[in-house]
Image (tube, rainbow, N blue to C red; front, top):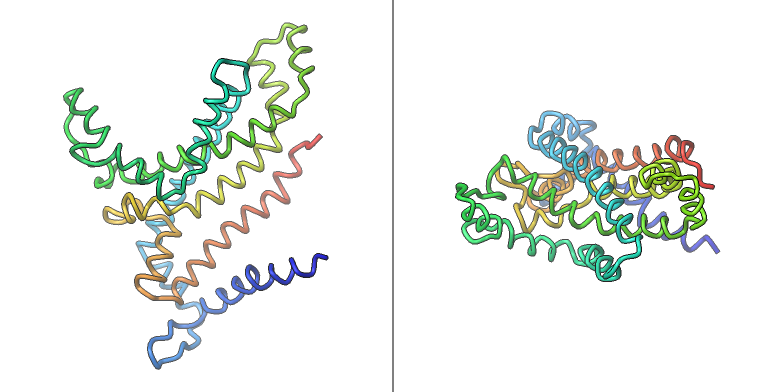
Length: 279
């Protein structure tokens, strides 16, 4: 029964990875000139490429900010909408709505905030007497602006997992804590948080992967600019492969990107899973 799934996995996942690894050791074919073996030349070009390192630093910063912010915000929202309150269903829907929107649509929505001259942030700045600022056109704020969009979209998605985990916890735990006189913070820190660790590990791995594969909003908001200030690794890979048509160099970048993600998967299997109690 597993054979069809194994064949599909090998054909559409493992074989492309191996093929990409092989292509990274050849030159890019151009016209009638076939590709030739160049060894590690593409990786040497990568080491000397300042745009690659700029994209790598941007991506590490993007992931380093997006992951903790989106997970923390998701946990707070889940704890809030898990309580009995008026309008709880509306709040849950409102928090989850960004998740069901395509990233391109989300980016278009946030253009309403960031557009110079008549965007919402510009209107607020003008009302407060502050100078005008191009949030997406300034190298100092472009990456932060696109990061905020990703946090807004990711938090609602992760909230669903935390909410499901909270609702699966035994209600008698809260009653026992109340009888013992435990505060809400003590109940959360001593009881709920340890029980949420499996969910946190799952969410953490997904957040890390998303931190290196979310680039759709860049096509609408900045296209990696200005001066590569908001270029992320996957966006740079797309530019090299499909704008510059340097497929061999793009294959080398792909190998680095896949290595990062595989490293995170191994960290989950051999380190994080051993530190989490699932029962």
